[in-house]
Amino acid sequence: MRAARYGGGWSRSVNAEIAEENNKLPLTRAIPVVIANAAALGVRLTRKDARAILIEAGSSEWHHVGKFANRVDYYATEVNYSQVLADMKSSLEYNTSQGGEFYDVDLRLLALVEELELSEQTDSER
Image (cartoon, rainbow, N blue to C red; front, side, top):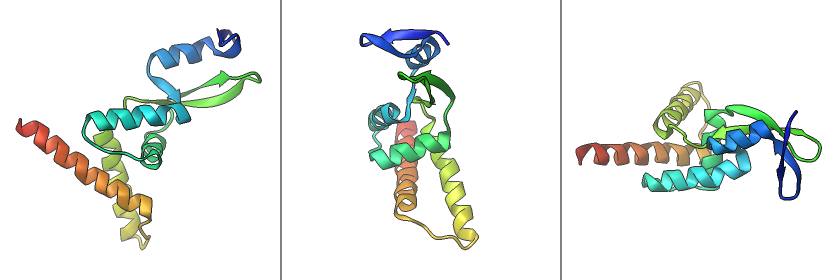
């Protein structure tokens, strides 16, 4: 594993550095980026919502980071919100049709789907 110097010590692999240059970040650092990207689209996300969206989209790769070369998942911050939220909505609808129950986060995410759909309709009318 080749490592890159960061902050005076060895912190992450060279490939992790390249991933970060390509807007792929560890979950804790990706969440604020996704919130900002969604805000630019006019959608307000909480940290919990952004985390759920990133996890639903899935990690795109992993890299060794830190003093002990721990394996860390990296997530793409340029998320196709429409597709991820539509997938989540389908999953939630299937869950309820199978006798499952909605949880607070599910209801919030459904509201986000509707908000995003309205935002997209408004953009297409312009």
